[in-house]
Length: 318
Image 1 (tube, rainbow, N blue to C red):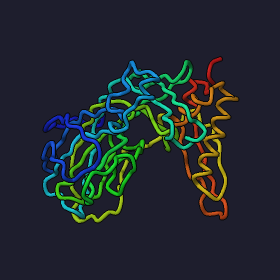
Image 2: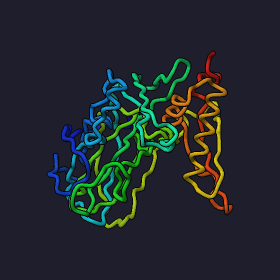
Image 3: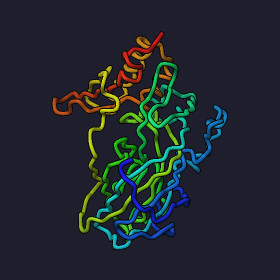
Image 4: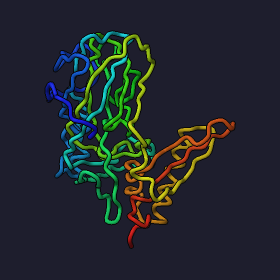
């Protein structure tokens, strides 16, 4: 939490997809603060007692719900909506899954796999001896599009949306392009933790209450979201260094896949993890980085896994 602010209201209205014709749940003026009750990415289909059968029966028409929309007075196309992320109140439960057909290695992991979590304010246990630092953030956060009709929440867009940037956490100041009067802002898909890249397609998906304050930058004319963090972004996991694997080649996507494959192999050899658990661990804790993109014809992608998840020694107890 960064600060307490007077809250105008708490929003419980949820919707699927972006549509600028949706009526606003509330109207605010710049400077006002709103709390949002955010559902998990499954829309409540994968609760604490969920089973693999529930995952197999997942209704994709209900996934990625967002809370809102909020109409911000004075917001006009060409402006930037300023969103100050103030506070998260996590539910303490969540899930991570391999969903068939989804994820960086979808063709190599065709079977559904589900991990349920309970977590504290600072830790989530993946397996005995493997602890994930909890750092809540908003996976989906954005404004309505200028184009008419309903648009899927799944891809990120120029006005924000399903960006899955783990640094959109408490203290961050986000600027989102406005394309319609009032901005019509919504938020959802809260995560308790995630690695950069979210390689299996899911993080620690978890319902939360999120508190945000709104402002405006007039005539900004941004083409995509921008944000400023309040401080360091890796200090919660970098104390013991990293295990790093790489992928090299002329295609960044293929190189990313190679780096993840290599880390799955490493986690099996060094820490005794099965392929499915290794894949999910990469998604919630490891960071994909473009290390080099100038030395043609090959580029290099690295996957950084913090050794701290394996305990004080950086080595999982046997």
